[in-house]
Image (cartoon, rainbow, N blue to C red):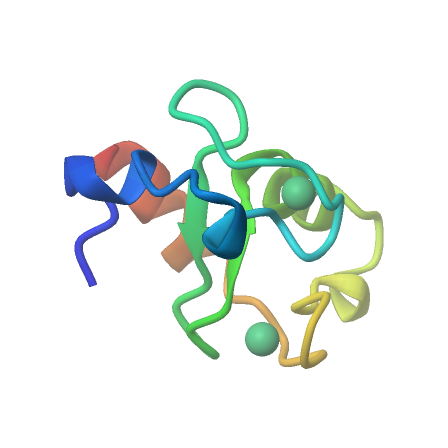
Amino acid sequence: MNISNRSFYKTNDKNNVITCDMCQKLFDVEERVPTILPDCGHTLCAVCVQEILERDSAAEHKCFICMEPIDGGHVAEDFRAN
Ligand SMILES: [Zn+2]
Ligand SMILES: [Zn+2]
């Protein structure tokens, strides 16, 4: 899925509001950029992904939704691509 597709950000009708499952806030294009976790395919905002990856214990680097471990290296590559 190409999250840079412009129509993605225009999906703002009430039936299809796109929010981060972790912080319950709307995705945006600057701070809460939707970030797909490479290992499980779930989408969290960049703020939450960053918060997870900054936890002291690597064992805590897990997807908020499914608890799949997150490979921080892969996510960082995605950040650079954006
Ligand atoms: Zn979030
Ligand atoms: Zn997940």
